Every structure is written in structure tokens, then in C-alpha cells.
Image 1 (cartoon, rainbow, N blue to C red):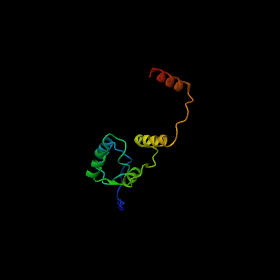
Image 2 (image 1 turned 180 degrees about the horizontal axis):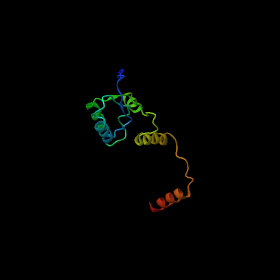
Image 3 (image 1 turned 180 degrees about the vertical axis):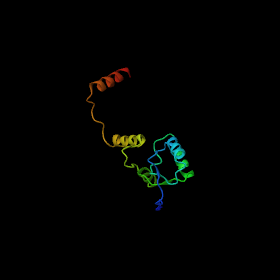
Image 4 (image 1 turned 135 degrees about the horizontal axis):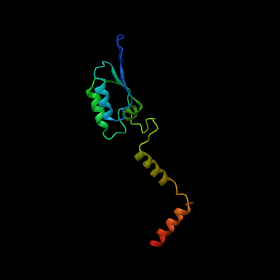
Length: 125
């Protein structure tokens, strides 16, 4: 959904909240500290990395914030694996690493420490 939000020329103050990334406590503080400001906007990237990603979204939905679609929001909405922010979910990284490991043979060990551990494990069996 595309929308144009106008800010009246008479407005002297606007409030912007950038990339809360599921930090619901920061969203709560922003909403409380800007309650008297008529034009408030969230710059997107609502979800992501906090412990309760739904809480930030619920707070924004219950408020009068105008919200832009950030790269994270776009990635979630279009089922992208990477939003381009540089963070990759470790669970996805392990999945890719596991798939790559199964697809190619393991290289021979070149570490004396690893070789010694394998030798000790073999002797104990």
C-alpha cells in the first residue's frame, strides 16, 4: 500500500523513530516522549532481533504513527532470506553450511591439534 502523508506547513516539530528492530521498550519510550507531537513517523524495520518481535509491532499498530516499509519489513513481506542489513540469521547460516558440507567431501585435516584429538578419540574406542 502506498500513501502520501502531508505535513502541514504550520508544523514546527515532527518526530522520527528509526529502525526499532523489535526493541519494544524503545518504541514505548518514543511513543511516551512524543505523545504531544502531532506528526510522528517510524522509519521502518520494525521486526527482527528483539526477544519479543510482536510487541513492537503491536505498539505501532495501536498508535497513530505513520510507518514506512524498511528493508527488514520488505524482506519479511516478500519472503526474502536477507534484508541487506548485513545480519544473517545464524540458523540460516548453519543450514547453508550443513548443506555445503553434505555436498562436498571434507578436506583432510591440516591441524596437528585436530589430528591429535582424532587419534586420541580413535584410541579410546
